[in-house]
Length: 53
Image (cartoon, rainbow, N blue to C red; front, top):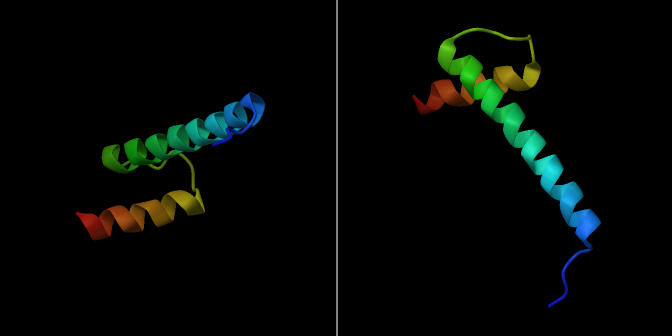
């Protein structure tokens, strides 16, 4: 079993954590009910959230 080079792994981790941070920010906006920015991605997350709740 071979592992990807440390640099690639680090890059993937930072991309993933960046995405996670953005998602958490969106979810916080939805829960608090304030639109931080008119983000189309935020709108789709809002729709999904509305479907779940």
